[in-house]
Image (cartoon, rainbow, N blue to C red; front, side):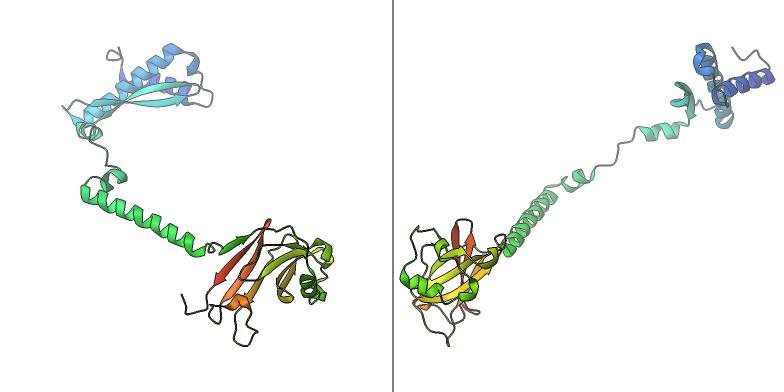
Length: 252
């Protein structure tokens, strides 16, 4: 259609259509005929340039979308045959495929995953506290005279004797929990009339008493069979008291 027109007329028409498409006030999106003509002229223009560059070699076209306002003009962009051959080349293999493409690599992948899992489990067990030696339940009994004598040995705790709650004993040591002065809670570890340890803290704080086995101390029944330096920990946990046994350094 454009072969019979002089080059100057062809260029003038292409410039006018481009101005309507890309100028400051584009209106070609409302004119389908002009859009089709612009597509035709752009394809011809690009085809002539590619033909002149390649000589007798026939260009191969690839569609390229050019946005014009709300419409889009499809332009046939020529490409040399070498470029077209490259499009059909296989995409590079993914990293995962490369890692698992041979049995040896799959084996090493499984071994690596197992090591990661074991390392995570070891880290968790390293930082997690050991399980309690025993979990003592409340007995629901009132304090006897011997217990009250032991409680009186800690006057600074300000224990309200009417709130004393006793728990099962561990190695002859009986933990008692009661309300203390200034709204605190107190944990007392008692063996008959002997008060071996007391600790008071706000209700939201951890309540712990540690009883150690040391040569200078009076050897209570709780220390039988334990090495010097062993520590027995009593810890209030909800409605129970947990006990932990920490052996002396250098012993199993």
